[in-house]
Amino acid sequence: MDFFDTTTLMSFFLGIGLAASAGFRIFLPLFALSLGAHFGADLIHLNESWQWVGSWPAIITLGVATLVEVVAYYIPIVDNLLDTIAVPLAAIAGTLLMASTLMDMGEVATWALAIIAGGGTAAAVSGTTAATRAVSTGTTGGTGNFVVNTGETAAASVLSLTSFIWAPLAFVLVLITLYFAYRIWKKSRQFFAEE
Image (tube, rainbow, N blue to C red; front, side, top):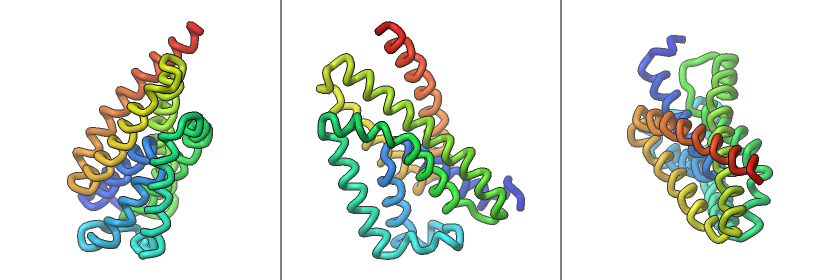
């Protein structure tokens, strides 16, 4: 296994882009991967044990889950309740997304990289979005959450799409996202410290 092999590197970039997207919306990148695997099988190569993701049952299940998740975030109070479980679920989704896209790697290396890079990226983004929504709820009484929710869904969509179109750009966007996530996290700590 050569990590700097083009195929391996591109699969890593794809996995990181989708994992970060899972930090914004858990099911949207899984649904995007499912659609991509089904309709773009020549372009998107998945780990052999993940070929089932492109099946019609997976597409339908993940499509319904995506729709329910997106709508649920627009329901007041429910959005904050979802944030209590979103970080661990995003980490799991990020791990699975990374593992499904990594090519030409051994099992140990695949899962180690998936857990650390995929799960860690998704958890970092998800934790920041939860903090952002908490600040929005605290400062606007929840009325500003609509904007936060719309931004998160848009970010998940753009990041997922970019991951498929040109994975290196998605990787750069993830680095930018993580930088802003760190800045938002610092500001949210100050906000909660003042209360």
